[in-house]
Each structure stands twice: as structure tokens, then as C-alpha cells.
Length: 243
Ligand code: F6R
Image (cartoon, rainbow, N blue to C red; front, side, top):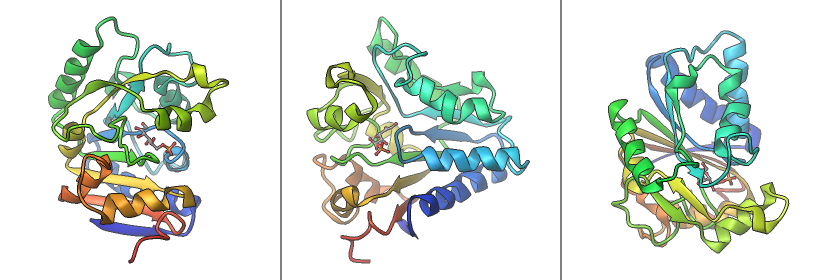
């Protein structure tokens, strides 16, 4: 695992954007695995800026998102569909038909998960998967206890994730309790993984995930077994790591 030290959130965002930009420049028709949440907002803003300056071309890029809540319509600002369009897709020249997000409105979620996994395969797999790290060590919506062998599947969110995500909703009751997520196996199949983490609040879980035992209790700990992982983290997030 490679660790890139960043000073703060902005520095983390810029350094992670450098890696994604390099991927797009080296392989213009690459498949990017994308994440939502607070962590990648600055990184996406950096990519938009570079696109506007003419330094990046997304016309051949394909994307697959990690996850989506079940039951939120596309015009709901909390849906990941809405998030991706607002913060990235509509601001760059990626073709809408080349972007993929699990279908959170399907009648048959199990089948939609199987089909999503087939989409990833049909694109030739993920060249670079971007991840954030949940407070409880989750990646995507793979909560503690999830089997490492899982492909894209439906999940019930844990109380701690519902609590963490409630900051984006008016009331706790509005937070969806179910989601569709790429599984750990889908994530681990990516050729390259970049995980971005910032803030004091994640220092403990960063230490456990990257320097503790590999265990399903801390889903992100499996990343220690991937041959090409880069952790881009700020000083606060790395403050409990002995590096
Ligand atoms: C988002 C996702 C989640 C987040 C994680 C961290 O698509 O899959 O695993 O990456 O919950 O969220 P933030 O960045 O908001 O702290």
C-alpha cells in the first residue's frame, strides 16, 4: 500500500485529483469507479476545474458508482444519482450513457444488483476505484460483518451509518435504511484503488483499517491484500498511525 500524506482536505483533494487525472490521461477510455459523500467533493471540484482549463477530456471515460440508496427518486438531492450529476457529471464532458449508478428505484433490487455486476464485467472491469472510508470501516455500503466474497448486493444500513448520513437529511426518519452496493469482491477486482480520508474523526478507523488485522469487522482492512492501493489522507486522519 502506498500512503500519500496530505496537509489538509484541500491538499488531499488535489493530490487525489492528480492520480485520477493521470489515469484519464494515460487511458482516455478508462473505467472509473466513483464514490459519493463528503470526502470526494473537493476532488471532484478539482477535476471539474482541470476539465474547464482544457487539461482533461472525459469524452471516452466510463464510470460505475459504488452504491445508491433504495427508494430515493433521481430528483431527490440526497440520492447518489443527484449527487453525481450535480458535483461532477453535468460539469464535465462525460457521456450520460457512459455513467452507471445502481438503480435505487427498481422493483427487483436483487436482479438489479446482478445486472449491475454484469455491467461492470461488460465494461472490462474497473481501472481505478475511488473510495471513501466510513466511520465504522465500511467501504461502499459494506458494513462490518459483510463477507469479503460478496458482489453487488442489497444491504440494510447499520445504525451508525444511518446516524452518520443523517447530517444530510432533515430528520433521522428520512434517511433510507436500505441500499444497493458493490460488494467487497467487486471493489477488490478493480485494477487500482485510491482511498481518500480526512479529519480527526477518522484517525482511529484509519489506524485499524490499514495497520490492524484483516477482519470483516473492519471491511476496509481487506484493502491491505490488494496489490495496488493508494491511501491519500490528511495529517489528522493519519495522526494515530505509526508512519
Ligand atoms: C459513498 C460510500 C461511502 C462513503 C463513506 C465515507 O459512495 O460508498 O462508503 O465513502 O461513508 O463518507 P464521507 O466521505 O461522507 O465521510
